[in-house]
Length: 325
Ligand code: UT7
Image (tube, rainbow, N blue to C red; front, top):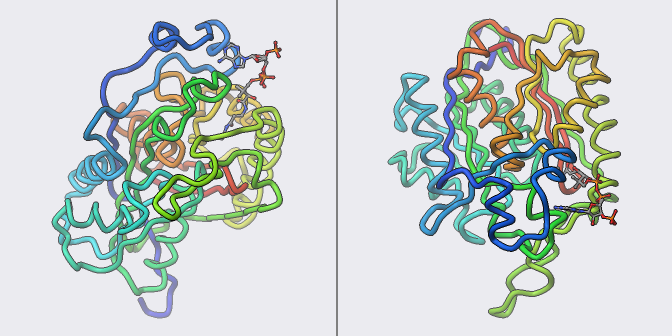
């Protein structure tokens, strides 16, 4: 590389959604005491996709990865790193990344591991993989975000069960001559660990603790808007660019009100924000790569566009990445 830092670019995107869309009315028909009006007004969510029997983080992640490989014009044999962001792995171990490696047929080809940073997981996985490639130790990575939160929701708790959906998104990352990922900033504050959590595990052959997602929605909301705008500014400073050079903000899709409040603080009009929360719900680690893939395939995001990715969730953990696509 002639002593020059090598660059890292996204060369393909892919995504996968399970089952059929489930509307707010469908949830009411399943006995949840809610209304379409409440959900749409408070969150912007109209539908979500819920995994069916036989579908899982590994099956959805594999599908998304295959589509990303196809767009990049690569095969599994070209990949020497798989980083999967998930909080809902198929098993405690082996990691779901190794199971995806096996399904892709990329046997014993490089490294594969899971990253657990909940809704900011894709940012953590992307920034991690970018550093592997930039260092020269690896050439081509699959970075996947996949989650099936429907399996950790308390369907009796209307304040959380209406918010989430299942899905997966993936990108292929490659060493390149021209800049792609311009900045990546990650943060965590473990003091906030009880705001959004699943305080359960398997021990001595049984579920110990509470196996369901619990959230203090209002506290999360307040924390998220400030953290997301602050971390975006850190990414701009790291790359030495200004906010007005961003073509598209692609934020974690948790709530339309959080997205629009963050965009407002960044002085970005909603016309330059990719939103999929209305039809995907909150898909946790999958939400940013799912939104990216949808926007690439619809022609909104095009080669040469500058993108700002952001995510925040349980931990608390959050991050941003600035990317020339
Ligand atoms: O991935 C990151 C994680 N999550 C987030 O980013 C979520 C952040 N937080 C939020 O998006 C919002 O706080 C929520 C959408 C979760 C809740 O909105 P809110 O405006 O903060 O509502 P609230 O929790 O203050 O509840 C207001 C009312 C309550 O009734 P009362 O006590 O005022 O009579 C709730 O019982 O809304 C009621 N409620 C519902 N009503 C109908 C709560 N959930 C529902 C529901 N349907 N599903």
